[in-house]
Image 1 (cartoon, rainbow over the protein chains, first blue to last red):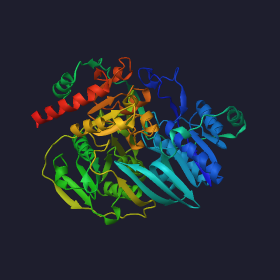
Image 2 (spheres, each protein chain N blue to C red):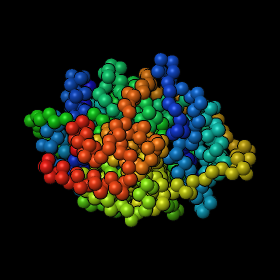
Image 3 (tube, rainbow over the protein chains, first blue to last red):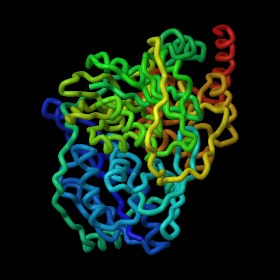
Image 4 (spheres, each protein chain N blue to C red):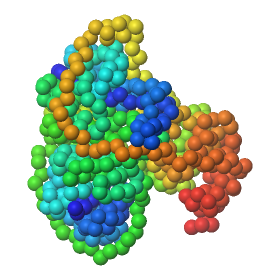
Length: 246
Length: 320
């Protein structure tokens, strides 16, 4: 089985968010970038398929050279090789089209991605990719097993879970549950050393054009200080009269 | 440029978000001087949608779609858009809505912006405001394609009653092979889901153990709220994973979020800060959650929560 894991390169959640150039650019100064946490769950599941079922695992990112440390980290966790599509990921549709070009070339059986990225939480790319290459698509996946050319999966729905089945090839957008938090792996020194020697192929983009453009950024209005209340009577009164939520 | 809205439903009942997208679509259609058509798939009574401004409703009744199927829903929505000459499709942020919207965008070759929190600030170029960086910012995004898909964030624009006299007609679409097959669905019955809840009552490690959740459930019951928990609590197995809210757990965008014994790690706040009013109950006045909250009580949950339940019962009795 050939698996492709799509990796986004996102600011760590604890980062301070600032904008520059008259609020038109995201200020990356001092920001730590990481593997998108949702992708990390899917990558870890791919490692399971590698170890238990002999799958070959390739990781891919659409981005400029600054994203390479994130791909190296994925290699250190255990992916066999990496592909970077050398273009800025400015738009979900553009990223999906570039990934589709990679998928069409690669003959993959299973595409694993995170349900969403931790920066825009858009849930755009996996579904678009599946549609572009005409693979089946399961979103919000919290469990996947593969037996030969068929897969059984569990996905989260509003208020519960659904069990579904599908043939391969298949695009799966995973989240916590596809593996548990405790199963996530921190790269060890051996993994980091080996990752340096693993192939990281840079491919030029297919030339997809963006369908959306960022005009400007805005910070949320500053929040007022917390109102500390002494007792539950005051709290109920404030929630009713002031906040009007009960 | 006419507007097509997809009003999502579950088991024949419209979701709250369906009324939000109808309200939103109605306003956008007015902004661009056009008309709105609303599409339902095995949905509820169209008169419910007329209440929110939907004049023309297209109904798909299809026995084979007793549960959601991404490919089929995408095919129906894009065919409805084509017959209505709709260049703008508006979809909610339910689990189904978020799944199908990306497929619809590809089928229509449309630019797509999700998590949109307000009406377009400009219709030419078409500019929308969407959430960014876990609600620590917003991005004003121009959709530059002729056809467009807008995903409206939950509980952001809101549902606004706007009664109109409307019509409903049946719509038949060519449904492709499903691809992914539904085997079984399990849903907790009778409880409010975190996605739909106006109020969410959430608790953390401060509660010391799973045996102490009775008061959390009782408080939720009094408020008609959904129960939720922090990540450590779900990792420890005190509560099911489906209750974990925060980054990597479920997002919350409720009107009222009550956090009991949760310190307020950044990852937790990232998932819940779209909620409108946040209340914190914590013994530690230095807990970071107090900085993110609107109202706070510094106190022991084991004293405060039972008092809150009793007083709320009195309050509900007087105000019902």
